[in-house]
Amino acid sequence: MVGVLQRGDYKTANFQNIDVLGELTALCESAGGMVVDRLIQRVHTIHPGTYIGSGKAQELAEKVRQKDAQVVIFDNDLSPGQIRELEKIVAVKVLDRSELILDIFATRAQTKQAKLQVELAQLEYTYPRLTRMWGHLDTLAGAGGGTAAGAVGAIGTRGTGEKQLEIDRRLVSRRITELKREIAAIDKRKMREIEARSSFFKICLVGYTNAGKSTLMNALTSAGVYVQDQLFATLDTRTRKWQPQAGIEVLLSDTVGFVSKLPHHLVASFKATLEETVNADLLLHVVDVSSPEVYEQIKSVYTVLRELGCEKKDTLVLLNKSDNVSRMGAFEAVQTVYPDAISISAKTGLNLDMLAERIAERVRGGYVRIRVTSSAGEGKLHSFLRTVGRDLNEEYIDSSLTIEATIGKNQLSQLKRLAPEDIEYL
Image (tube, rainbow, N blue to C red; front, side, top):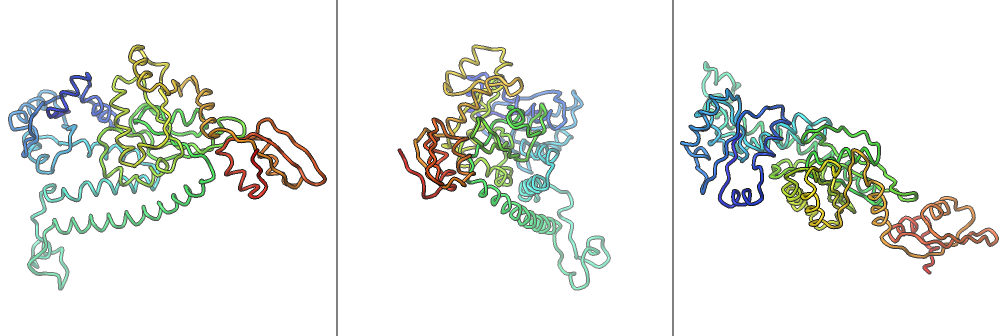
């Protein structure tokens, strides 16, 4: 693995004692690889040909030979030309960070939507790189009757010929168009589902990948979400109903995890999946407080939220895995930075009751005293008030029932749908 740091990056890394290749190591292991060596270079400017310069490239080639490595992975995005030149020198396959993440997403995708989204991201990443990717791009198609290239063309298509590059570009462009059309149709259905939930208070779990979001989702809702100690274990959004307290029902959604420098093609392709985040009333930011890179992970999450336009959305920070923190001083430091955060353990259930109580307070949004008079047969309305109301006072007069109750302000919208003209505020 290779990490290239420019001056501002390595000053920050040294100051904060950051393992600059820690995340790339985890990504590599999630993809099924085993890291045999690491190389970090500090540079003032990026070399246009090999990214790291010819001398460092030769040093890298020697490490590859010594360790019998099969793949070199850069923690940076490389141009097709740089990959080609590096592969000539090191004599093994060279991957950059975005390509590795795309590969992981491709292996994790389970649903049709996720598979289409990943394929679209891969093609959009590949399309501008076609020029320098293949060795056959100078082959001419339709150029002559007897040649292998000419055999590609049919009658009436032979002429000066067409470069294979143009054929590849046209095929990729056509497939991108098809994928966008299919994804758009799925997106429309998904948006209708989201709009249909407008009457519910919507909560979305966000956080760095492998922070414990799916474990928390299962602990709160018994959703049965796949859980594994690896990055990007789940790519699909799951939404379940959750009752944090009696009389309060919310929708809780789990989203794909974030990492730093998430390829923008993936953010764009998974935009509909991340719409749950955009439309949420409250974000639960799940933080792995046991990680030595906790601050960098938090920063990565807020960077992606900013890309989605959600950085100012109401957010509650959850310091997960607080039962697994070996450095109490570091734990207390995080609590000092986020004083309103709740320390929890999704695995053991620590403080999940406190989380439920805090959520219930957010849903209610304060209290209001109301009086509702309705026919004695309005069972649904009466059941709602008896469930969510406090300090109830009921009085029957002939065939009518008057109920006085204290309810949460955020529950007024539900009440208005049941009794649009019969609410009196006290």
